[in-house]
Image 1 (cartoon, one colour):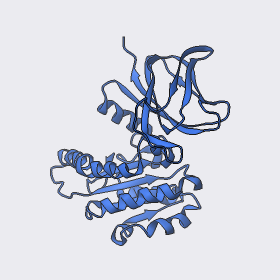
Image 2 (image 1 turned 60 degrees about the vertical axis):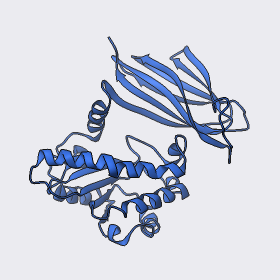
Image 3 (image 1 turned 90 degrees about the horizontal axis):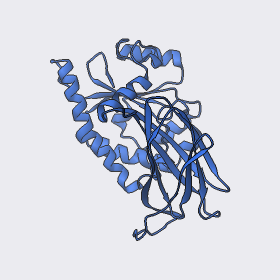
Image 4 (image 1 turned 45 degrees about the horizontal axis):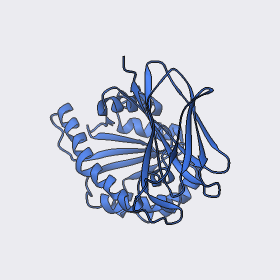
Amino acid sequence: QCSNQRHLPVLIFLLCAFLPVSCTDVASITTMDKVPRYFWNSFMFDFIDQLKMCKEANKNFMRCECMQVYDLKGLSRAQVNNDAIEVIKMANQITTCFPETLHCLVIVNAPGFFSFAWKLIKKFIDPRTASKIEVYSSEKVQTKRLLELIPATELSSDYGGSGPTQFELLQTQARRAYEGSRGCLSELMYVKGSETKFEFEIPANEEMNITIHSRSASGATFSLSKETTMLRSMDVKPPDGANNSAKGGHVEPYKVEISKNVRGPGKFHVIGKPIVKSSPGYFLFVGDRFEAKQ
């Protein structure tokens, strides 16, 4: 978050970069009927907090608006699917209840195919809202436009400004939300066949709490190792006695904590193996990073 020339809060969403969460990832931790709750919470609570921060920084701030920047760097054609369109529809239904809160939306790093996708997406957006949206594919053009809207000192250096990088901002936000937090590591694992492997590092003076989220009805066995040493192995599957009615191989979301306080430094890897070989599934690895306790 930063502020623009009119001292409005600027919200930058990294849709595919530092937080590579797709609709498939989301489906591992929730169901589509619960997605609207996120958007309601954003408007009813988060947005209010952001406005209060702007008011504290500028006593003349009066407008209940915000500017948004969507960074599409790394977006693939596969991510613009039916689930993604459905989420856009839900978001639009809720944002129409707050018609004057969006000052403008700037979409940057749009891939070449997005022009076609935008024509489709635009049909589901309120015309008045659509008129406030600008789409850019050229880095030179989008940088010029962003600097017209946002002071260079406020704009991230990732977008041509002199402010902190988005990674640094994410780290700062994580520390504000959770004492000692250093952010989060996430990876969507499609477990099928013999095994699926994910490798990561934990630096010195840092530790991680690891949780696996899923809606797979059959589950999978996950093992955590540090280099060649096995640290833990356990099944990630729906809890016993849960009232789950599997549809398309999916049940209600569940999560299993694999390990707590995994301390660095070191190279680690997680291996997932399907409990039922003929039943592959998606599993979302989430590693909450913290400063190591002394």
